[in-house]
Amino acid sequence: MNILVVDDEREIADVIALYLQSDEYKVYKFYNGEDALKCIESTKLDLAILDVMLPDIDGFEILRTIRKKYTFPVIMLTAKVDATDKITGLTLGADDYIAKPFNPMELVARVKAQLRRYTQYNEGTRNAGEVIDFAGLVLNRTSHECIYNERELTLTPLEFDILWLLCENRGKVISSEELFRQVWKEEYYKNSNNTVMVHIRHLREKMSGPTGKSDFIKTVWGVGYKVEE
Image 1 (cartoon, helix red, strand yellow):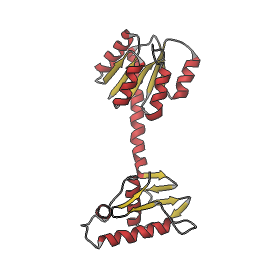
Image 2: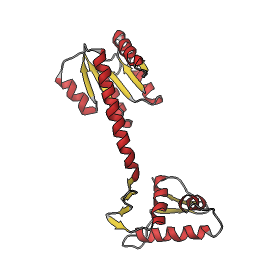
Image 3: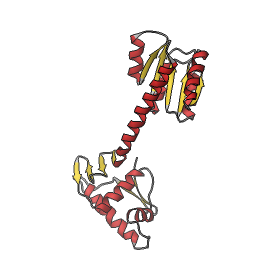
Image 4: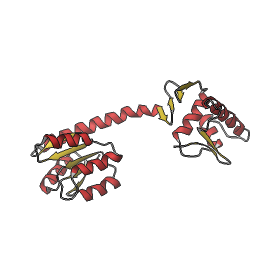
């Protein structure tokens, strides 16, 4: 796993890196905020350890930047025993807070605890992959439920699979051939296009509102179908 360590006190940063590396973590170590921000943008990180007081950009600003795009755990370090700093860090999205001086072994233990919690959370949210929820549509693959604009729709298994495939690839155009191969799991022939068209029409009818029209599934003429992001 990749861990970012940022502290302008080189001895502290070096010790933290040494202890983490002994547990076979890959450490990206920096002594200033600017280099750390470049690393955040270019590297897949699993956890960050940030000193609050840095010579250029403080740890809180780095934390703000991280939380705009990423959910990995962040542990803040501070030399000040100040409740205000702790509250600020936790409010901005820090997961833990350690005051200096600290026992490096305790820090490693906290790192492991945060990574374990984060990994377990992500494993749990994989089940959320059984649910698609956007633009007024909720599809639950486990219960085969479809709710659109607060109305429950009764879909056939094929209709459900077509809608799921389009939503899972929203923003992309899926050809009739690809739809047929993935949903029907059969070889595509000329008349297969008519089969796809009929099922798309039925879906649109079921998803239509009071006007009797639905533009949720869009036709890209000569190419296929898509759902907007």
